[in-house]
Length: 608
Image 1: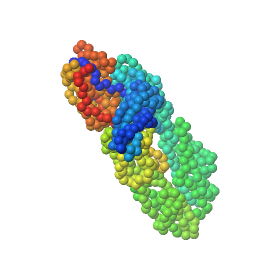
Image 2: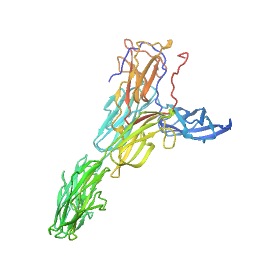
Image 3: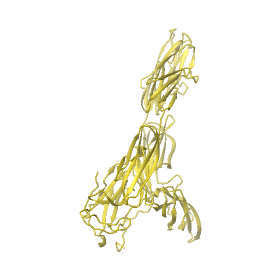
Image 4: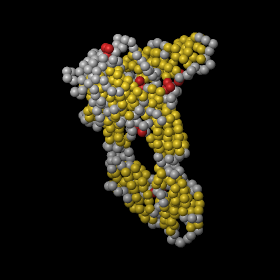
């Protein structure tokens, strides 16, 4: 994909140059009252200091401005200076801000919304984020560059396999994706080079786990008179491959037989009556193992002359709600009649229904793995039991009504989730870098259906979230194990050229006619925009590097200078090139804008 280009001949002063300030890493809190005075029958003027905390890179000249979302709280003087704030540091403001508070309404600090920014302490710093934060092999990890710079980045180099060699070179700042198929730790590195030849690199360790084998096993027949010859079947799926199967036939903790190879099926003869809990341990080639005992493996060896029952299901798997017919077949050496059938449909150990028929229909409304059981009782009181396995699946979807949230406009994001089956779910908002900022819904049992939740841009502590990108994630339980529906791992990062106004052939910054380019986003995106050489792959000025913008029209104004304010012009026979790329947010992404939005800003004279 190529950026649009036009030959630009005139020169001037740069009016808008983006310097990454990591606003999402800055937060204001800890208001300390300095003074108060009554100004009317209902109002008090309150003067505060505050602290700023920086969880990102070191910044210089940090400044915060505040607005209020409450009619009872009016900002009189809303600017604070914090000076230089190192990485991980907290600084108290050097000055104060003033509000006018209606005394009939208690002051609520969460009504204050801060916009905080600063300039990078270093002229260039490589950085990147990645998702998912962890996973087992094979796992696809997406890397997004977020460098800190005050000039143009000419080159991004990636070492994604951690071998110390930068195998990918990119001049735009695109997302990179790598599939890690082998468990281990990978030192992923990004090196950036700016237009002045300065470089910086950073390395982050990606830990790829080794999941134990996924195992299912069963015994057939599981019940009957001794000697009872049982065939054990086992299936195992593992990314690294299975190395061995170890069988403990009587469940006493000692493994009686080891089988190497790809198949662990085996047989065993039970000669002593009793109930046995055989287990199988499956180990992969990297040493991860899983020990499995499930109801379909239980063996009931009965005295000579005992009956046998076999349970069958007409549907062993499917999506909830799943209608299943359970069927029982009985064989008896003594040829006695069956008195009754008892059905434990959910496998919890309690027989819920009794019939004289050899079948029973049941409905599984919730996703999970179930082991329904039947107990057949003969006319003379002898019994036999058997179990089967039923896997019930479900689907979940998540959608947002918008990807841009202006907290100053009292906006909210509507989150629609659809559950195909009854589920225990939670809904959270996370920073793109990781970490929950708001729990919209704690774990709750919800029936199948469509649900609407909202986020007003506040954190769990009631304060507004800082400017930045956030992800809405649905958490749900399957067999008691937490699962995530996080669309940021599968969507977003699509590169495109945003719509823009036409580029003039010339511009005249000293005549009040700078180069002005309006670009329009139909969805929130990260934007990279720059001025480069038309004939040579060189950037002169970078306006934005993956800077998040909300939906709407935005303007870039340029008067021909570089970041140091020096007038530049293309080489003889060459011309300027304007380039712009957009990168879509994931489908669960929200851009929070927590500050005053300006429009129609002008100065006179235009250059000073």
